[in-house]
Amino acid sequence: MVKPTKVTNAIRTLRFAHGELTQAQLAEAVGVTRQTIIAIEQGKHSPSLELAFQIARVFDVPLDEVFQYPGPDSTRAGAR
Image 1 (cartoon, one colour):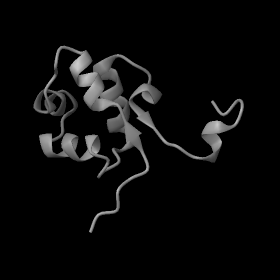
Image 2 (spheres, helix red, strand yellow):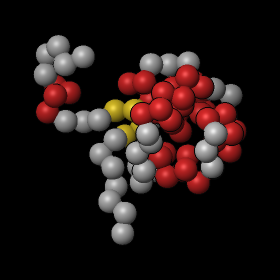
Image 3 (spheres, helix red, strand yellow):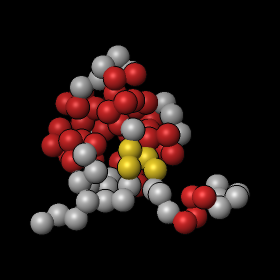
Image 4 (cartoon, rainbow, N blue to C red):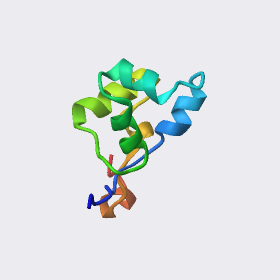
């Protein structure tokens, strides 16, 4: 059984905000399968750092607008 990741994402929201980009179109743009995009969107898989940056570039947004990692450091002042 696969352990879900703690990394959350806004991929679905961003896809719809960018002309209703399909999972297949996003997958093609970053060079992975649609199944990989589905798993990332559902929080079942964490992308590599390189893939995370590629996804952010497709949407033309900073990485932290696509992916979030909740934790004790995220609430600390000056954590960025």
